[in-house]
Amino acid sequence: MKNEMRHWLAQWLTSMEMPTKGDDPLTVVILAVIAMVTALLVYGIFMRVLVRGARKVIERNTAWVVPVRQYRVLEKLAQIAPVVVLDLFTPMVLSLWPVWQDLVSRGLELVMLVMSLRVVFAVLDIVRALIAIRPEGRRLPVQSIAQLTKLFLFIVGLILFVGILLDKSPLYLLSGLGVATGLVMLVFRDTILGFVAGIQLAANRLVSPGDWIEMAKYGADGEVLEVTLTTVKVQNWDKTITMIPAYALTTDAFRNWRGMQESGGRRIKRSVYLDVNSVAFVDETLMAKLKEIRLLAPYLAQKQAELTEANAGREDLSMPVNGRRLTNLGCLRAYLEAYLRANPHLTPEMTMMVRQLAPSELGLPMEIYCFTNDTRWTVYEGIQADIFDHLLAILPEFGLKPMQRPTGQDLARAGAYSS
Image (tube, rainbow, N blue to C red):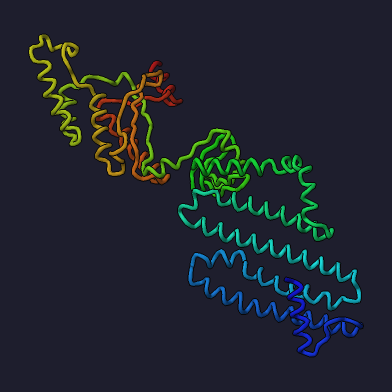
């Protein structure tokens, strides 16, 4: 191919009545000037025709515009043209100096090889960027595959580079590559492990860019920005960056909150400790007060009918333990269940309950278990705070008191009372 192009170039120079071989210094200078001018003209034509023309076509598809401009693949491709022209002119210009002709030819071939790799790498980056834009592309290890392809092409390019530099066949160099396999495995250990881990992460959909993951071992708690061949880049909620080895995600435990984000509901699971000494039966005064609570009225009407039927025929009901009675704690639990179901910020399709946990020295835990219908962190925290603000505020209406460890003021007040 190269010989045919040189033959065509020689015929063109002959038709233009120009020298085709540097037999003397003056002819060498003339051919060198012609070569430089031709290379510049070819570069200018490629930039005007190829680059500008291709840009007009690409700009019709807006998704291609940013990646093509960012990685400058057209400009890098146009830069190869003048080098090819100079390589075609080299035998003509340096025909009197075979050694220099060989050195310059090899140098230009090496430059073309490096430029070609740059073009291929830019194309890979564009493909990766275009795939990453699509929603389904987020679930593919595009970054890892692109990096592995670049690594393979770099190794091939390095072999070709050394072959051109030493004027040896690439097959000659490949024959000795098996000896260095152990060294390659050692040098690229993290890369190989990372690639295998990248395949596992993608196949099992363990982690993808945009996921919220939590990995205490590496101090990671935030959004995944990038999954590469060897590392996973996480931006923590405090805006710091944590780099996690890709293979660590397949060997160590971590938490991925994607399921919560995709479900559309985020769990609230929090308790308020109540003073056990404030738990009591509902008397007539408290009953009259509770009946004024709109959300609790249906429950009280139903329970009073059940209790009247259950206590019919029982004697000596002056003692509360001789019959069934309502408690302020049970009424609070019924009210909270009705309050949660009436809350427009909670998801009724998911688990929703109010339950008592085992009492401890801190008091009796009353736990609220439900799911918000908005998974955004700030909104979730606001909904949760509103629920517990309301819960703490209504405890006196039920004759209940929250429980907490004594503070300095409590101890000081107790000392004042005792004295």
